[in-house]
Amino acid sequence: MSDNIFEGLDEYLPVDDTIFKDKKPLDHRFLPENLPHRKNQITAIARYWVEALKGTTPSNITIYGKTGTGKTAAAKFAKEQLIDASKDKPVFIRVEYVRCTDFNTEYQVLTHLCQRLGRDVPSRGWTKGEIVNAFRDILRRNAFGRNLILIVILDEVDILLEKDGDGLLYTLTRTDNIAILSISNYLNFKQFIKPRVASSLMDKEIVFPPYDAEQLADILEERSELAFFEDTLEDSVIPLCSAMAAKEEGDARYALDLLESAGDIAIDNGFDKVLGKFVREAKDVIEYNKVKDVVITLPTQQQRVLAAILKLTQEGEEITSGKLFESYKEISKGDAVTYRRIFDFVNELEMLGIISTNTVSKGRAKGRTNIISLQIDTDLLEENLYNLL
Ligand SMILES: Nc1ncnc2c1ncn2[C@@H]1O[C@H](COP(=O)(O)OP(=O)(O)OP(=O)(O)O)[C@@H](O)[C@H]1O
Image (cartoon, rainbow, N blue to C red):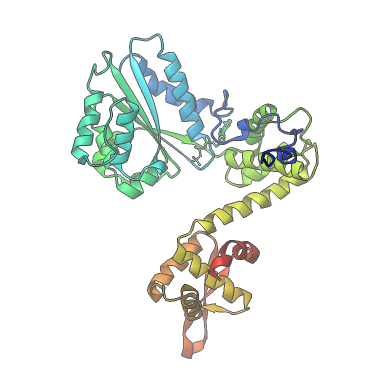
């Protein structure tokens, strides 16, 4: 009988960490017990929601702010506090968190909410009217023997509005005993909402401004105490992460990513201390991974357009629309889309910051031409698109 396949593999086990005490506090999903510099916003949510403790459905709230400004963390924090405060009250409060990017339609969100509230409804097959009725049925007063108040947190609501219109908001704002907390990255998200719904969401708005470097440093200090062993961070590490993230629109998520990634780089290099220079390297690693994620998740036809741009760049060609189409057709091997469609793709790639286009004049006879150029590293593209070339 041969040896067990797990024998002799100890060298593949992770070595004992001398830097990270616990990585969880650096994870985006970690909910800290304290959210520095968000007291005003959290108190504002509490002032609206306190009505629920008296058995009254609170007002709908909308919160805005750029990415990483603590909107989700603050909403979840307020949720925990409300549930805790309601324990000894004669009311029944449910707060449901819905990340709208996980759903495509109103139907899917309502099904999810019904199921969360204990009503077994089918994930497909019913008409929308049936699912709306089932949902409203649960919400009828005294459905649980006590007053039920449901607060629905709709995170990244703008994404669902873009995909499926404002039907969900319409249904929720027209169902008794429901309050909505919508979270959006865009101040102008209401452009997707018809006036019939906008009027019920209009009134209560809370803004989450970007953090400045000092505020980010306070956030990182608290998190790093939980995540790192004592004295493992060089003094410059937190100020550097904070300064870099403050430049990136005051994004706390980015600051935490920098810190974690700098710790990983220290370990990879055999250090037991995180040095300032690792933060600068971390910035490149994060940037690289971000671009890589964008490239590998592009639809195939767009990847082919990008592969064609890469090929022409490597050949030292000036990339005109005509040349791009020829090269793209070669790469597509008979499965090509039309010339026109290629330019939608070019626009999209430009919006993602992967390429840029520049209109140049080729003299009176030839008129004006669009010249395309790559804005990202060719090695990165080659590594991820080699199967198309
Ligand atoms: N004041 C704060 N104190 C501690 N951690 C914070 C604070 N603000 C944000 N964070 C942390 O930063 C990360 C990003 O925050 P969060 O997800 O709440 O941002 P967001 O505004 O919802 O971003 P997005 O719009 O991209 O979803 C999370 O790990 C969160 O815990």
